[in-house]
Structure formats: structure tokens, C-alpha cells
Amino acid sequence: MFLTRFRSLSDDQILEQTFRLGEAQELVARKADFENWEALNKGTQTMPDLAVPDASRPFLAIVEPQLFVSDIEASCDFYRIVLGFETRFIHGEPPYYCQLARDAVRLNLRQVEGPVFDTRLRSEQHLLSATIVLDDVKSLYLEYQERGALFHQTLKAEPWGARTFIVRDPGGNLIAFAG
Image 1 (cartoon, one colour):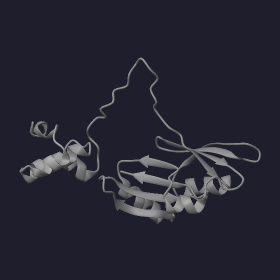
Image 2 (cartoon, one colour):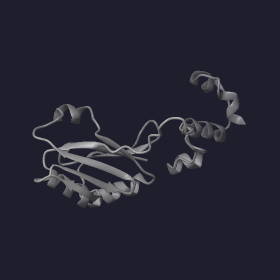
Image 3 (cartoon, one colour):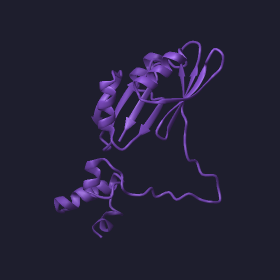
Image 4 (cartoon, helix red, strand yellow):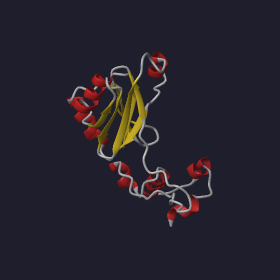
């Protein structure tokens, strides 16, 4: 296979090689963990993950980020109305904890008194509370734009090949969406 001859070369050595455009595109796609150039352009990862679960140890399957908010009701409303999540449960009297879900994504909101993070630092350094990976990031961006989401970062192509945008929730949490 074409890529075999490049496996042991450094990036500088690869750049010194001569090859056809199609070969270069295949190389770029494979380095970005895509099966081919067409899959990279579509943004759909078609190559299986190389990590195979080891049956001799526990397998980590899902993560549920806990986001800290100052107003649980306003935050739940935002995630439901603007981001399209459904409330799975609300706990406490008065409520201080809830779980929201959209498709396979689960987010836990915990009401706290006062800021947990330095809001200026969070904003300047783009400190994310969660990243959600999906297959059609542009469509979701357009959906959220139509619903009036407040974007910390609009949709853009990242240097590593992903397309991302970041939403700011009422609690100041930055949620990245990547495809």
C-alpha cells in the first residue's frame, strides 16, 4: 500500500518526497484518522478506533459532565428550548440538580452559590466545560443559530481538521460541538 513507505518517515522527510495529489490527499486523510479523502471532506470518521476493549478490565463507555450553574431553572430552560435537550430528572426541593439528554449525550447541571470558575479567565482561555462530538456539526450550528443560542465561537474549521463551534450557557459554561 502507498502509505506503508511513509510510516517510518518524519514530517520533514515526507515533505521532501514527490507524489501525486491523490496520494497526498490519502496521506492527509489517514493522518487525521479518516479512511480516505472523501470521508475527511464529509467530516465523517469511517475508520474504526484502533483501541479494542480489553475484556479483562472495566470498559469506560459514557461520560456525563457536571456543569455548575447559578440558576438551575433558567439553565434547564436554556438546554431544553435553545439546545433541544430533554429533562431526564430534577432533584431537590427547591431544585438544585438535574440531568438533561439529547440523543446519547447526558449533561448534569448542579446549582451552586457564587462562581466556581473565574469568568474572565474562562472566556479568555476558552476553558470548556464539555465537548460534544457529532456527525453533522453544520446542521446543528444552523439549528442553534435559529434558536438564538449565544455563541462564544461561531462555526469554524480547526487546523486539526475538525469543524467546531462553542455555545455559552446562562451559567457561563462553554460547550464545544465538534464534527
